Image (cartoon, rainbow, N blue to C red; front, side, top):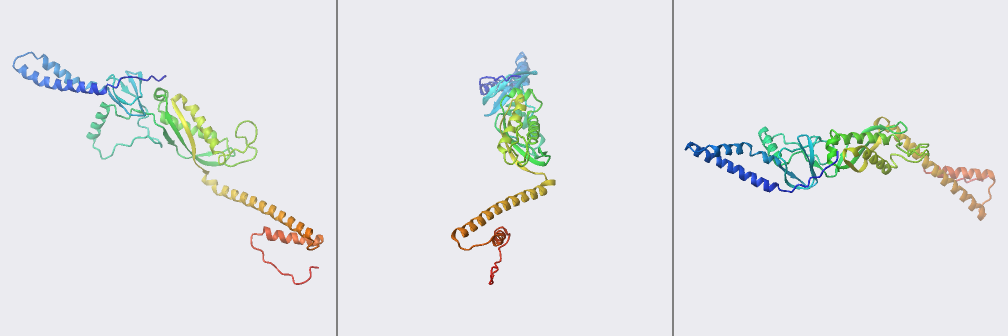
Length: 342
């Protein structure tokens, strides 16, 4: 289905004025025709005026209002006529109907119209709906604005089998109204489902954190890709995956962002302990490396300046004492030896 842009002149105001004048004239003609018919004149004026009054409201159905960044997909007796994309006040074939299968679909996204107030009476709601339909201001309009879709947070297993919770925000817009309306049943629901599917397909290729011997790019070489450290790359791959699936629906994916990322509740505590243990090990390793270098520097300076000559046994004792002082968790308590070293 190819989109056809209608370049209809914005003659809605002229059609409105002409139709209103004709309708008022028909009402006057009905009254005048009834008067002259009682006097014995021809009933032709009365009959014509009654016909115009009865069917004169039909042209009002052809009045369509298109706001900026909106489109109206029109069909005539089941045939696609075209799309009005330029904002303005139009008059089209009164028997044309606007199509938008996603008009009542409300997802977690921007650009969704609010519900009708519950306190509005049924009569007022009906009158408002009739007036809105008469001027083309209904939910049949297809929005061309950039909208944001926030699906629910999903629980997915990463490439190591760890359950994680992840959520994304997708910025999208309709680029081809004909494909969006006719190629899929409901383009909003279709987009939502494809976002969930693409998210699962990409997330299962990555570990939550950097892991050894994991290939996330598919080139056969292990890399350091992860959901936590490579969020930009993951988001770009999710965007490309969604775009491939929704191209037939006339949608364009502008951006995809990870909005929430965490371990699932059942393993969050264990993984936190694992991260703490890894951090402690890394910190201890750094402390030991620094302490060894300081001990080496102290022994080298003592030998260089001939401050004291120590045998191997005393050097070992000194190294042990220095390492205890430098690597201990608490401040060392010094003990003064008042006797001989030997």
